[in-house]
Amino acid sequence: MNLTYCIIAAIKIGLGTWFLALIFIMLYYLFFTKQQRPSPSNNAQSIPDHRAVASFGVLQDRSLQNRLIARAIPNGRLLDAFGIDNPFTTTSVITYRRFIQKVGPGLHGTKPKKWLKFFNAASTTLNLILLQHRSVRYSLPLAALVRQLVFVSILHAFFGVDPNNVNLHDVDIATELINLLWVQSKTTPQSYPLGGRVVLEVALRQILPDKFPCSAKDHPLNIIIPAYETMWRVVLLTFISAGFRNVDQETADQFRKVIERGPECFKGSKSKDIRTMAVNFAKEGLRLYPPTKRVYRAVLTGPRSPPFITYDEKIADIEKCHRDPNIWTNPEQFRPSRFLPEEFTDNMKEAYLPFSLAPHRCPAADTFAPHAIIILVVVLARGLGTLESGSNVWFRNARLDEDRSALLPSGRLDMEDWKLEMKDVA
Ligand code: HEM
Image (cartoon, rainbow, N blue to C red; front, side, top):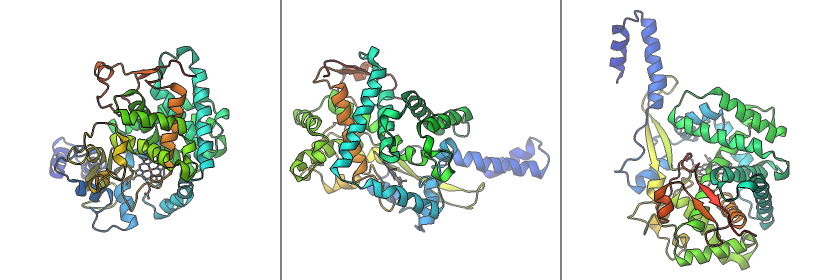
């Protein structure tokens, strides 16, 4: 389908006036060019190609303004789905800088007290969630449970929310709707049931009454989406990979130590070895199951103003880089020790991109995200148990249930049937 075809079609079907033909062409540009996406991964791309896309090297002019445009266009669906106005969706340099200045500093704190507080808040949250499920401990809905845990923990970290004051029913609604709206934004763009957004807004107002009313720039979803949405699946998949799947003896022994010593391992230089081990579990979870599987950049090829924008969409396939057998030994195996300095080669370093690359590398990459992931995994392992302690996970999928080495699916709706059977947890 091309422009000429559109014009001929418009005239042939007898719309009659140039005015209608023009509207037809505008609609074509507005909807067709926006929805058209190249296939998810280009097999010919090498690691440097993926890095060039992630680091905006594919742009001729890499000014901040142009980088924001190149990112905001493919992320337009997030704006449509959630109305968020943050670094992922904005083309305004001022809005971008304001957000980074507001959120950035809180993401670098390494004080042990902070992590102990985070651990306590997450443990309290899990206990409250388990109280709700006390009658079905043989079949806990893992995905919904982990979503609630991560959501409340993130609200605690970023908005000072006390888990004891949160209505978990509202959290359940909010987390389920965020998931559904996200999936819909990918599969059926431009057709969001407005009802979903409204109910999400109502739930958020109940959970965070102090944050409303607010302008689009100060909406809590601007933080919740990048912080919570990236975290819940990697926390769930790391917990299952380390606690319930086939791992080698070394990894099993390490995980036992991490469960015993986390979060105290963030305390001081004495716990450095355990801390490194713990963080390697988070790194390996992020490698095997990167929450951001792909990053997209729009390279403008024609007019710059809507609705006439035309662009080529470039893709950095992070998941593919992380599972490349030319780079990683047994890439489908969960083995945190591969991140030890003596094993982690320059090629691996180049191919490891869970947080993308400068100049827009995630500000949570170095401290907040890996610490929070492993603490939440430890809270889950202590609260729900592991295979070793007698608990089990059922996937309602013969292949996954029978073969404990099989790679887990990691899409947003792939985990809804996974159930945890709890046994012998103190
Ligand atoms: C496992 C957790 C996380 C992952 C995997 C992740 C991943 C990413 C990725 C891939 C990017 C780059 C996007 C691009 O290049 O277009 C990014 C940027 C960003 N992330 Fe994260 N993120 C995580 C956690 C967080 C958290 C907790 C926050 C806190 C609010 C956050 C805030 C941001 C912001 C503000 C940016 C934009 C940075 C910039 O443009 O300069 N992320 N993240």
